[in-house]
Image 1 (cartoon, rainbow, N blue to C red):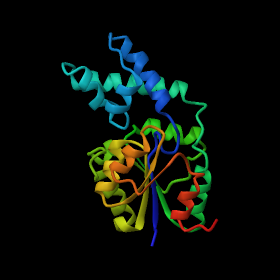
Image 2: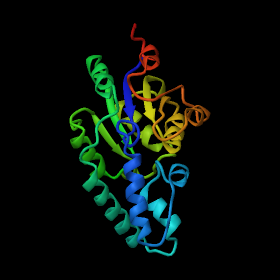
Image 3: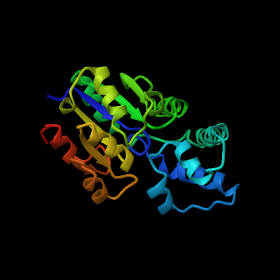
Image 4: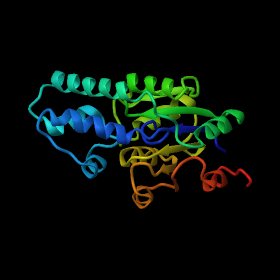
Length: 217
């Protein structure tokens, strides 16, 4: 019996990756570092900023890495004010609310970004919990963020459904034993299926999602 729906943020409820890529590209160019979309997709999408920065700047101190990360995210927030939710998301959230399901956001994004994006998307009150991986202590792809929210909600993995778009997020949810639907905004459907997705859809209007949820056509 389904008791909770768990959503990732970036790429899952809103397609932020093109904007994140743009900001990363601009800010890294200041240091003579060039990236392309393929590199971003394969090596950066879904990961924590400090991990990414350390890959590029292994000689930097921890403070320098966090300062850089904060500057990057501040720049992202400056240009993210016009983003909109993925098609059909509001219907999916409303469906869960009508059935009394618990709903949570589980993200590797910093809290400032998560709160800002929920405000922009007019979803500030949509979720019962907002789980920030860095605050849990172990980020995705480790299952810890999802295991944390299962414990918070007092449910088993079999009572939850997760939505994820990135390899790190998919690995996290699947490793936690949660049935996971892939959102193909940042990865090819075949890649998400290989990582354990039960179903892969472009957005929440896909009829296959509603069939999975047991909603008659």
